[in-house]
Length: 446
Image 1: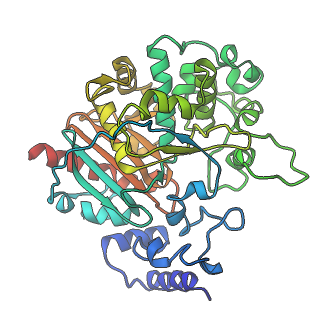
Image 2 (image 1 turned 135 degrees about the vertical axis):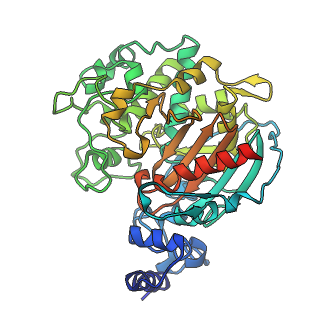
Image 3 (image 1 turned 45 degrees about the vertical axis):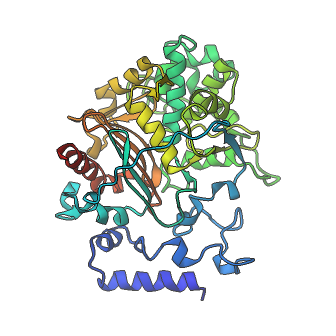
């Protein structure tokens, strides 16, 4: 039996016996997975040794590198599994942050949603949500910064679907500048999509995910269309009998209409292919890859510390719906710039009108149709989640717990990288959203 396997069996036995009593451990019991401490990739020793012994290797495609607990190492090492394109930071010096660290944040308490646990501290929530990196900015200064697991301050972590918000921001920039008409039909910009379900949608419907098409993004269903989509995106050689599409763009051309007769604009449905259609649109309009446009318009101009990178499919197309990996503080720079209305150190990187469009939110009725219990009253605009709460908060969000949470009222930005064992953020929101609000209120009282 391998070292890692024996640890997992021991952890499972403890869970079954009910021997763990900390808040984080109670949360782990609810998921059925080992705790953050038990699944720490450093403790498990993944990929350590020269070479690593077979039981500690994480490779692609020989093992499922995104299975838990391998996930907790893989999220910091995606370019070791998949081909990528650089998002260049340029050659200028980084723009440093000021620090004003606040030792009181760890003790901030909040009440989780749905009554799962009566009360939790901020510090307890980090382990409960398998946090890899946490950054809090208040009034433009770093007041909190911690790293766990696979991540350190020099590392890069998968942003997952937070990538969508970067893609959406680029689209909003082009709309604000008059380069992209968000009322145009997709087929008029991308003729290749004329016969797909996307062809008759408007650019804005793609941006706000109110398109209607046949697709399931249920990661728990092995027969869901998301796996056909992933197969199309694979950059690796396929079996001789593979007859599916090659790459994101070919897949998008195969997408059919909604089988229940739902029309474009009727309802919000969170579906990643929208973001890849949007990536195709902004590339066609700008004449640049998403990676190049992101570098030119934002990354090379915001004083980033590190290059970012994006995974690509077998024909070199960047994954506009979820392929970005970046450093924690660089996502903090992006979040602070958006909080500032697109301005960063005296330069308007994103037109104010683009940020106003995002913060204005999307249709409430369309969003309500999706049935997000913990996001009730929210909306979606330009590939951003709008909470419509008293603080006017909005966020970039990604599976397994990735977040850029922007609270304009509290003048606060929170960036979290995470490797929660279950993809769905609905399992993490109960101990995240009230925690963000509690920290905002704490900082406003200082």
